[in-house]
Image (cartoon, rainbow, N blue to C red; front, side, top):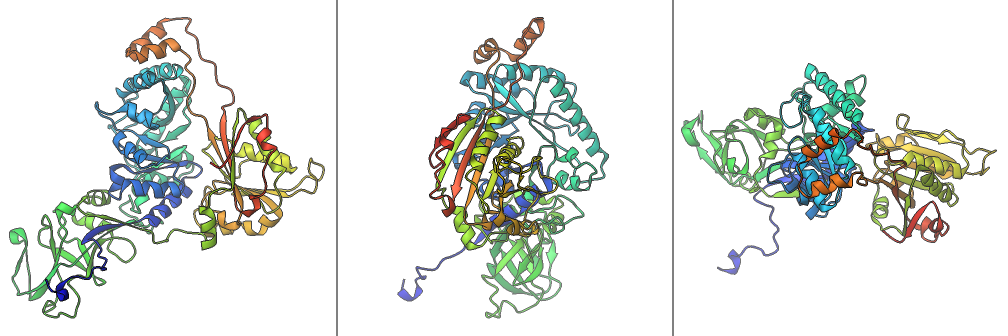
Length: 624
């Protein structure tokens, strides 16, 4: 090979075909859906390799955007997330007789339970000396996974025994809606009514689920038009297709719903040829040219996931959208450019020009391909083959603070403290002591699941600052101002501004509540503020409150029997036969873990030595 014929060594080539995944679109969609679901939490469903988008990168982006849970079908999918270092709560709900429940329990993967697996999971947990976190699934009419209402009472009795033995913790009850993409379908109300009945029975049986969840992506949107949105949203929504910027409705587009498609399927034109009228195209000659024209060869086919039945699907080349013609082959398809002589013109740049099948913005919609293939949008993106490389980009189309704020948000904390308050009173005591170190202009960001104690903490902070009493959650008003009480414990102290940012999805919405105006003269506490308000100041405290999960075994004999492989149903029967079987006492205040992290120059030289000596909870100083 002569030097003239050698390719340049520094030339960077894109893949010949790729599915380009915009992680900024993923984050935008998660934030948007979370704002609709608030105050419910949000599970981003990343099963099936995140609907073909790539489970690990998508999961990370979703968690960055505020997803509280990640959902998968199979335990193996959850283990993949754990192996990638993702520590967010994961729920897996579809099991087979070969599912490795022990591995799931070991990796803190929560498990949906629909039938036979309850006993196997309880026995696996007992044998490990662990408590498995479960979500019982009830079939409210879909006819797939889930316990029937006829079986529900017996299931509850079995679950109560396993809970009291410490083998399981029923953290949630779930169901799946079958017609939420049709808001007018009567089955929606029927399923929700059955679900409420099942939950009521569970509580009467002695279970205390903290997370009730039924709504999927269409259900989350349906709830916006309901008189009582909480009836649909419950405590948690499981959103799948919406995370990827795809509409679940036949009459509304992604744009209509405020979503941004995350996947763009593209390649380049590999060949063009001028052909006469009557030229047959692809197998079966189902298409013949009507006049002299130019054909372009697109190197994507059904081995890449393009449906073989998808004749007529759109392909955009140089800003013009053409229809695929002839039968989609294994590796390629053809489009008719509609004009003769184009192949003879070497200046038109057709060979090597980008060809886009679907994507965001001005690209063809995935909906056009699903219509051509007589299927749904879900299938089109999910079936894109591993032969098509995934390219990950970050367009920045989700809102982002300015560069200085971004740099600050990425910095490590200058110090941190960890507390383990044993009660709500202890939580408030930590907050009261912290208040003595706060001054006007300080920003405090509070994170933690619903019921973790964020408002309780703020009440303690208010007491320490000496503001007027009456601090409650600002969920429905977004922000509350609590002036200093001249007759209180700290006359002349700063005002407390208490914000719930759950429903705030964009910087414009944050700006609308005018925190910039009140911040200099107040102590500002923002619940659910991570990723939304850091740009307001160069320093902040981030406080995370985690509620303990799991409990102590109340019946050691039951636990031992399960660990030894005893049949759980027989254990239940024996306990029911004992008239004097003891009932476990209700727990008092649950212990919490509280981590206070300090960021920025305001806190660089402000050691809170008195906090490390608090008697209300163990403190562990150090950078976390």
